[in-house]
Image (cartoon, rainbow, N blue to C red; front, top):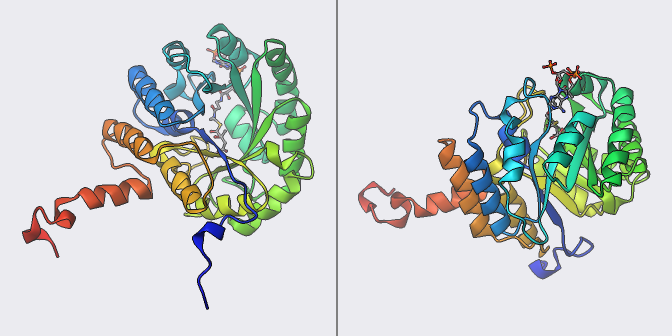
Length: 323
Ligand SMILES: CC(C)(COP(=O)([O-])OP(=O)([O-])OC[C@H]1O[C@@H](n2cnc3c(N)ncnc32)[C@H](O)[C@@H]1OP(=O)([O-])[O-])[C@@H](O)C(=O)NCCC(=O)NCCSC(=O)C[C@@](C)(O)CC(=O)[O-]
């Protein structure tokens, strides 16, 4: 039987997707070392030079809770204005929004959860309290002409209580969308979800929120992230969060590893003939830049392949060591 030509692989899938780079926030918030402000700015510049147009650059949260993000104001102030690039910051409350407005941010994100236990651990309040808190924050942001994105954490699994019902995720996503968030990012915080659960969860959310306003945010703890992205594409999702070099985890989700690596998502999209607008070699360079600073190899499959290809044992430059 003839092989299906690769040109047909993307049939029924979107022709273009948006990648939201979250490594500088979701990734670096979980590092044990405090990454220098200048390094964060240099990384963000490398990422936007690679074509990234939506990027989270920090969060205005309590520095006692997440000290790695304490320099967010300096990061924002150090960023050049680049046409078409949206820099975003996380804000948990009105105080965070005020700081975002003072520093000139044009986009913020509020973050809720579909699990009560995670909501308490992450932002010290119940889901209902968080939604009540976000209402005035979203309203004030919109009055200031600032776009608001919404997050729902624990969309399939909670690190403290296990499985999370899709209907609860849809309820929280619907509430954030009704309050004015332009896009709802669905976070598989633990990375424990698989493609069938993803499909069920996305389809439940799409009954409350237009599917074009949903984004997938997959951690790769169990190696399921790319499969979950594919399942989301089949359900009509056209926006995905990812972290260059697979940076990250979540300080309130013990054991969770980083987000899916941006480089790997771009490679998947290339294989599916789906446009991202991103330059893969420049992304790999950006990932290598921050990984070198963190003194470890970049955690993307693409970077590993490229580094193996450049290894002397593979190229033959040191053929005595080659197998
Ligand atoms: C939400 C709070 C602040 C509540 O914390 P709280 O203790 O309930 O708040 P509070 O109002 O009682 O204030 C306590 C202290 O925090 C200060 N404070 C209060 N608000 C702010 C602020 N905006 N900026 C700076 N400082 C602030 C406030 O001034 C006070 O300072 P003190 O008097 O003790 O010196 C706290 O729980 C917090 O900061 N949590 C951090 C949560 C966080 O950043 N988590 C990681 C991001 S979410 C995530 O990673 C998941 C996601 C989005 O990626 C998706 C996924 O994968 O699941």
